[in-house]
Amino acid sequence: MKSNRTGSLFGTDGVRGIANADLTSELALNIGRAFGAWLAEQTDSPHVLMARDTRISGPMLATAVAAGLCSAGIDVHDCGILTTPGLCLLVREQAQAGGVVISASHNPPEFNGIKLINSHGEKLSEQAESAVERSLFADEDAEPPGGTDIGTITDYPDAGEQYLELLRSSLGETVALGGIKIVVDCAFGAAFCLGPEALRRAGADVSTLNATPDGSRINDDCGAVNPQLLAEQVVAEGADLGVAFDGDADRAVFVDHTGTVRDGDFIKFIVATDLCNRGLLDPPLVVGTVMSNLGLEMALESAGIELVRASVGDRDVLEQMKAHSAMLGGEQSGHIIFAEVGVGDGIYTALRVGEIIARTGRTLAELCAPLTKAPQILLNVPVGDKHAYQQNDDLKEKIQAWQAKLADAGRVLVRPSGTESVVRVMVEARDEDLAKEAAQSIAELIACPLLHQGLRELPDDERSVEG
Image 1 (tube, helix red, strand yellow):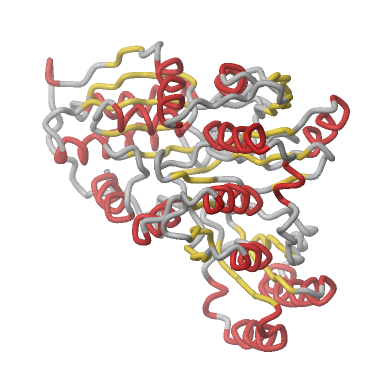
Image 2 (cartoon, rainbow, N blue to C red):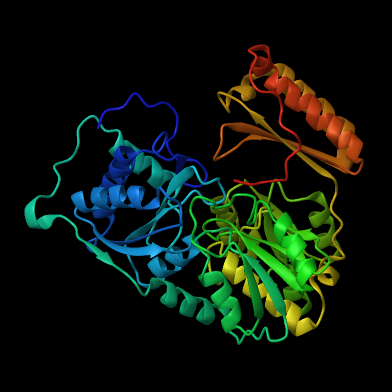
């Protein structure tokens, strides 16, 4: 297949775009075929699992990817609607050659994506993605299998139940959540049934929000990126806590009984300190990202725990966890990775957090109290080329000047998004007004070429979203 492509097809979390515009059936077919060709070179048993979230475009794109895989001689076992971590765990447990998830995770309903999974249940490495891309955009296609040598597609109706059993066995101990009332926001996504069911089986009293498979509303003013409705419902019901998943349930954001939202930094803190207090955090460190709040680093340090920072993206977090033999890592967005699971799983995270609350008898608010976050301002600047800012010498000088002014009391981070055409500007400082001033001045310099062309102005401050 020939192409005049520029740049990389893969972002930090697979291929992603607006369905039937950026991400077409033709592209999905060719990605499936290219992934299948790569898999055929890696294994003598070419079987993959495939799953999707609830998006309207999911069946269309899944059908196209499956056809591409079959045309490369790969057998596809279709799990239907299943969470991304659920598929990853099943791929690893069953020693499958790989997996495919059709999902755009936390993005709005009009988006979709294709995530490629290796035989270990992990996202493909950058090297493997490059190999798939080379096959996808090769000038000449390899001779495909024909006749009876093509792959087959079969349904896998028990995937959800088997995933729930894997969750139970992965905990390694009995999780008793009796007496805890939890409100669960399923974001109209892949966890619409599995999330509440897992918590109920553990004994929790569960009520739900947005717990239907409505792909037209997935992540729409709900879920991990928009937990405000959940916060209101937790207070209204007098619940002990709330948990919000995103569209494919690899993220979990929590709400305490007061209605205060607790993101992934708080979750890393309470899990790490709980393990440390029980003598189970070995080595005494946690992997975060460059976006992890300065307050988390200081709170962990006070508890004798080191924070190791990785680049944004769960793949980079997992790499650093392996390099440091860490038991815990994750992103501010609520993507938490436990070493015993090996993938970010929002449902598993909810079970672990609930278990800590049940065992200690402390509220989520009490567990989070030692962590005071430094003011963190994030501006998302829409751009045509999200890498062009790196050639702006004036911008480099401004960033250096602000970092010098903030010194040890703050941080400046400017980076391209891995999933959107935006440049993210993050500034932390003990003085919130100073952080806002720094972020705005840097963002304006990035956006200046766009503003001069009469394009959209800077957005308002947005809540931090990693990936």
